[in-house]
Length: 243
Ligand SMILES: Nc1ncnc2c1ncn2[C@@H]1O[C@H](COP(=O)(O)OP(=O)(O)OP(=O)(O)O)[C@@H](O)[C@H]1O
Image (cartoon, rainbow, N blue to C red):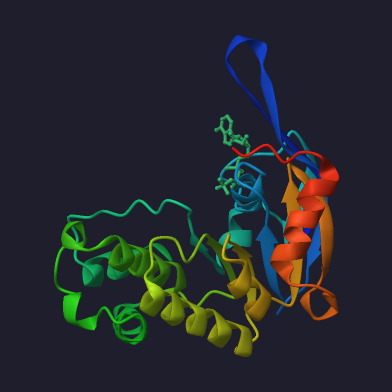
């Protein structure tokens, strides 16, 4: 379970200016739930994820993962993370990169071999697995980053824009993979602009606008398409300047 309690984060900009990226965020994501975090560009989705993973610290408020404070390294041992802009050691092959990622999680060589061939197969990377990542297409790099996030079979999977750079075939692969994580009872926190995928995959959705959680609810309770609700919520805030 993830709990955000009254979390705020402000970034200091040049000449004394500030941006309130996350404002008084309180949110609970239950274990086994697939939660979709959506919002306009610059709304605070990636900042929320970075706070959850302790990549940045809040100014105030607390965040816990399975009852452990997110500041505690142990809280992230069973977490898989796909950053918005994955940065991989691209002189490695996908095979080597997954072995490296698995080693960081303390996996044995035999588990790494087993998990990496399973993921490479699922993500249609088996044939390219011994080529350097630097020669991969954008979609292949994205799929490699997703494989690395899942190498240790995490219980909580945090995906920041998982469909970024993927063609329809790649999108379907990732869609099916997330659906499988859901069936396995994993907790999944996804940020995405692909609202049709969010609507089909997620149990619950939160809409963030300019750092505030402006709407939260079960997808099964939606009375209109998610895209329509999204546009309405953003218009209601009056903060609809395109960033
Ligand atoms: N390191 C930083 N320094 C200064 N401002 C930042 C920093 N990181 C984020 N911001 C600002 O915080 C706000 C929220 O950014 P964030 O990246 O969380 O938005 P987002 O919802 O993920 O956007 P997108 O959908 O475009 O990826 C934006 O105004 C952004 O410019």
